[in-house]
Image (cartoon, rainbow, N blue to C red; front, side, top):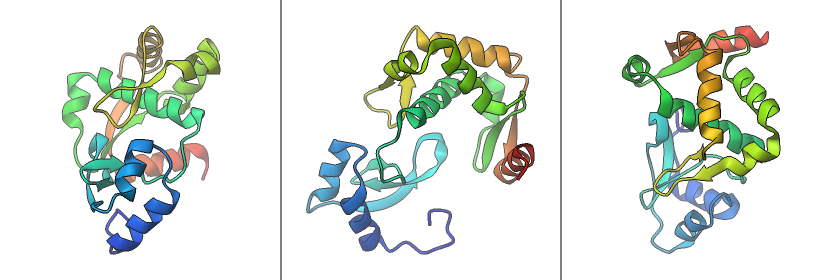
Amino acid sequence: MLNGNVPVNFPAALECFRQYYRANSEKVELLLSDTAELTIGRGDYNSKCYFVNGQSLSAKLDKPTDAAKIRIACRTVAREDEPAHIAAARGRDIEIDHQNTGGFAAIVEKFIIQHGQIAVTEAVVKVPGLSRETLSEPIRSAFVELHRQMTSNWLLCVPLHVVEHRRLTRERLGD
C-alpha cells in the first residue's frame, strides 16, 4: 500500500490501526483521540511509514516478538556504526547488502548464540525520541565488534539498489 501501487483510503487505514494496533500504548492513545490525523511520510532509514499526528507508526499491527526486537535493535546498532562511505552511499532505494556468508541474519544468529537470547533481549532498549529499538552497553559494543569482524570491517557491505539487493537475497536463499 505504501509503495504507491494502491491509493490510500486514510479513514479506512485509520480505523484499521484503531482496531488492531497494540505495539505502543502512547501511539494507541493518539490513534483513539478524536483529533487523530493519519498521514504518510518518511521514517527511520528513509522508509515510507504512517504517521498519526506526527508520530510514526509501524505498518505491523501486532506487538513485535523478542526475536523481531533483537533484529531491529541490531540493525539500529549497525546503522549507527556505519563508516562514512556507507552512510554517504545511502539514499532513496539504496540498501546495504551484507555479502558475508549468511548475510546480516548470520551475524545476528551468531550474536544470540554467543550471548544468549535472554541477555540480548534484556539489552534491547528504546531510546526516547527514536522509534526503533537499540542495544544497551556492554551488549551493544559486543555486537559492533562481531559485525565488524564478520564483515571484514564493513568491506563485505555493499550499497545496492533495492531491486538488486532483494534479487540477490532471494537467489542466496534459493527462492
